Image (cartoon, rainbow, N blue to C red; front, side, top):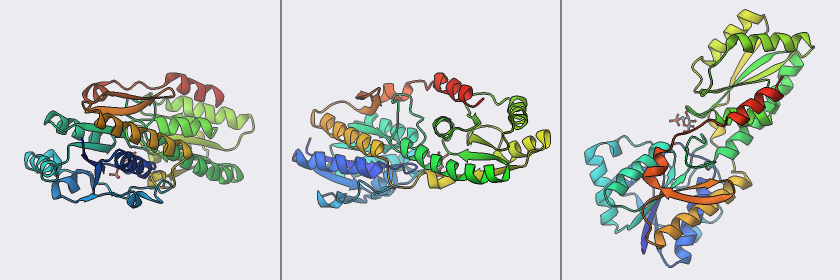
Length: 320
Ligand code: F6P
């Protein structure tokens, strides 16, 4: 394989740039031509495709976001858009494609692969919601960003003796909430994978208050059915404790990637190009334990996601 493309798609995630850099440099090191495709599948459909050089990825390993930009493409879901994307692959004589993105983006990759394009999928999403890999690119940075914010919120909550509901991202996955909650010593962590027992939440708050603890941090993952405002209102009504809401929002998606995300991105980007060089079938690249793994793309996307119940119980136990 001599000419490959790389694109980022879906929500941006810290570490995407480090992954692009690894793909481009591994490709060039191995005498390939590497083409960067702008704005994900949108740019593929529109032919926004440019050759990358060693220097075009200089000074980006430390930057959040994605230099290739990203999009959620509705046109790619249409037969016309999909055909145009395939045509562009042929127009530019691209023999393989590295897709850095979340679940939706890798499913888009699977469709291309079923149409004959060799695809390597890298898990680029802060949500950590891809079952085939222990960790996705950007998750560690997002957790650390949330953790810093929780530290600041704890200062003011403790000074005022308030309860604060902190809403974090993650779509239908509670991992950002769980990890940030565990690392930040949150009093309660609410995730979509578990049923919320509002009576228990209120009872714990009152029992802590009775022990002299006047402030509490409740981390709520955005996928939890009860909204943050509803939760705060119910808590205030049932306990009489002043309760505020902080939605962390998009700050979790930006920022310089942690060392862990940069290293993971570098290893996964390298692995993707190595597999393309070996003319491998389409794969999803991930990490299991401390090992970089590659799994047949279709199989990887069919795997069922299981919540890490040991970590859930640990967070509960340590927050008594
Ligand atoms: O998938 C990443 C993510 O940030 C989710 O956590 C969140 O639900 C969603 O994207 C927000 O999407 P958008 O950028 O389209 O508002």
